[in-house]
Length: 432
Image (cartoon, rainbow, N blue to C red; front, side, top):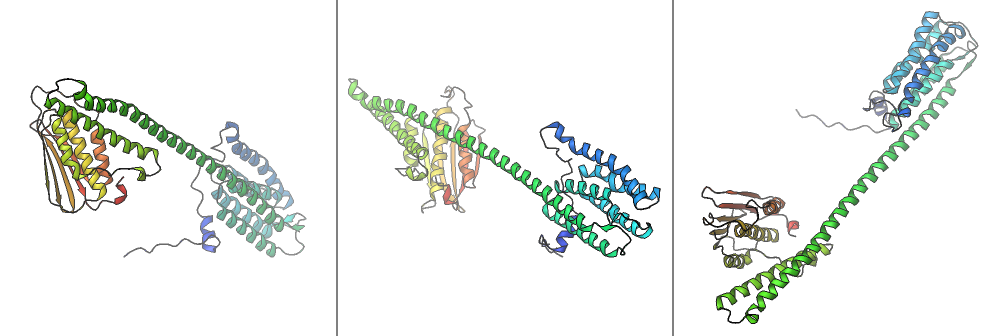
């Protein structure tokens, strides 16, 4: 049997108002507990103690002398009307139930057992003062719906008691006075609470905005550093390209093999410069439309394998299945994964044999790059054989954006394996 979803009642309906009276605020911290000044945090306690100290004896005196109640009964009623103000510091709504019931019981006891008096009825003066102090604490803690329910309950009880009073027995009727004063206290206290809440939210929003500004500044700084890095590296790469291209003309009797090697070096340098300029165009523009050349893909893998072959890594490329066009994101990511894997072989296992394979299987592009162990005397071209790990991090990020899977790790024979599975239905917005 499935449970039916409950539909929340509207704010002004009777069930919603009754529910508000039975659901106090989850915040049970003392009033003003979050204020920075220490002396302000103690004000609610001092006010509650002062109110109880003054209202308790005066309440006993008023109930016993002005309304003619038994001294013991007057003391019990005065305690119930004043002492719960101490509870109102942290839980004003439960305190309202206690004091409200005590005030109502006091009025009924005066009506049924008290003699004729010239004092106003149904609310003794001490009871009105204590009740208004309680409503002030309530307004500073509870939401608007609860305050409305409390005021309507107070007004209804006051009007009912006013109707029950026999004519001429009491000196006057102060029901309308209590209704007006309680409404004014609740309205003012609720306005102060909502204003403080709005200020708190504004402060939080300012902190969030400040954090966003800091993040934007960090991103702008990273982009600036990237552009500066491009300027520095591009300068040296340009020098390499120029020197390599002009070496056969500047140096006499250069062997054909060396001239071919210089030409390959110059071509590789120019390709690196072209890719760096494309990345710089993305950094300097608001969107990726600033790219002026198509991104590399699987079609350029043969040229990539040939390039690393000239660097001393004999690589073989095998492509099977999937004659159709790949999604742009998958096409670019496959190229970058193979490029980074072969670059790691060149850096960390120079001279090792490498195998690159691409296959389409079950709506996935499987990319595998495996290299054998490097020759025994070959050392890593990096200062540390472990490297920085940034290449593998970049691979994982690309695969994650395509909801794919990446497996990397060493092989028992000393080689290394990189295997990626890229879904062919990857979202197109990742193609950046």
